[in-house]
Length: 142
Image 1 (cartoon, helix red, strand yellow):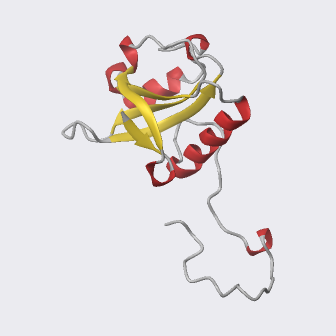
Image 2 (tube, rainbow, N blue to C red):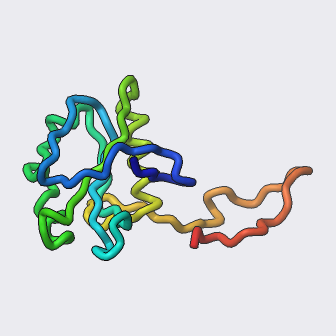
Image 3 (cartoon, rainbow, N blue to C red):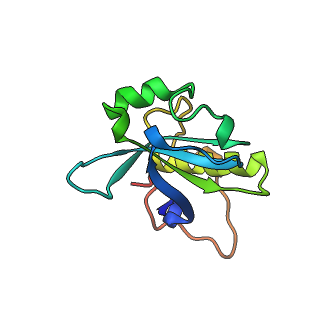
């Protein structure tokens, strides 16, 4: 098991080496990982996140439409790992929401869609209420 997400809130199955993995027939959110430091066995980088109605039909391990990009990024097929969040009973919108959250947190290099983590004043605008004060934290997540 590996935990991903804000405050590591999602318990994903895996990671497993992608090259020998047989995906289960179930809806899921999945992440493709590489070992970021071969000397440290449990240190991974998230390079792609996605979701599907059926993992077994997603084209794993290497018929997925982004597999060539994963291989290029990882350097070898044995440096590609997969983890997945079982989502039985979830709907597509919920899986998509989790995927977008993970993409905004990890900024995976192989995802085509990118999310801006910046803060802009016009998103909320000026307002006043008896319980509001000025921000005490920075506007950037870093």
